[in-house]
Length: 133
Image (tube, rainbow, N blue to C red; front, side, top):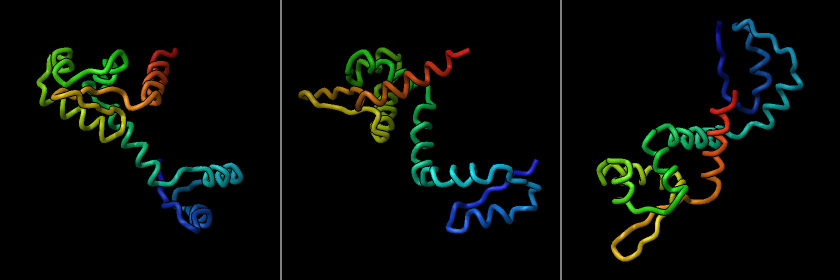
């Protein structure tokens, strides 16, 4: 099976029609044209892929689960997950850079919480998906 990749440019449909070296036949050209018009930009798709990568780490998933219940400081998360504060801080930094968690300072203690309800929605939809039969 041959797979063709074509950059989505100004002449995308013309380029797609010229791809005969893959023995590809476009059966529903109208559907293909409609889908091409509705696709997010490559930049947006890349950003989405990067977001999903953040969810690909078990420690980060556990941190997100913990933060569903309550905001927590690094020390408490480290105790909960039986990990070093340094390791937890690193994972929190990744989550913060992805805008999945936020923090607030109270004296010397920094408390982390979910950035917004969208984070829980994403997580809940993932749980529903993996439990479907």
